[in-house]
Image (cartoon, helix red, strand yellow):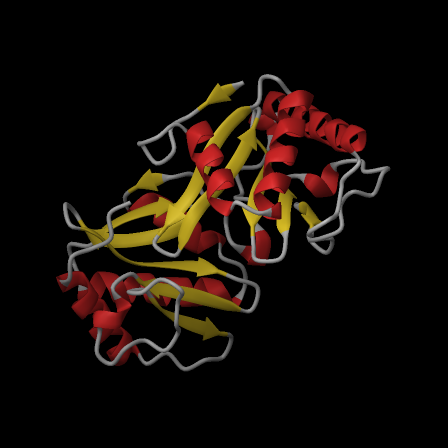
Length: 276
């Protein structure tokens, strides 16, 4: 089994073990059991800890020539989401969540529930084989970005304007217009803004001072996150479980008060930014 650094600090495998220990209940035991089955199915699996943002602590990821699955933990469920689950044969019908998607499938495990270990190991092996076949054919695949859950474009991490424009151009339908207006408004308000795409979201910041804003596509809205939102006046309306973060959700047909949003952007850019 291989490991990779988690956020540039502790090894990912140690981060996963720490998370399991911190849970200290049936969720920790369930995550530990599923982790062991994944390792049994693929001894060469790569353990990672990904998607740490101001609003998310990150999660375990198991990969081999691409993501096999993630391990998300919620109050009442442990969710194993297979990145390409919709393309996998599942004769044991382990998938019981995210069934409506065109790409992913998930297994939700509640307290007291068990999974067929043999069937799960076979599912992991099929996921690895699918990733391997995809790797050999990547040069033949269209350059059009994949749309993830909620229609969010999958864009590789990169700094600068080009990846942000690639993200905006790939936003589906009416959301593309929102993305273009937001990007233009941010540039007009903060001409020296530093841009990047991280965790499949455009980030905006001041070089050397961190990030002040990002946005992300969901099924029915575009969510704008102000990382120091509670310091803005007026405070953006959307609450977060993270103390300083506030959101603005933009839905189809919503009127965009550009003067108000520009004011938030101007204030946010003047504050110390978020540094991953």
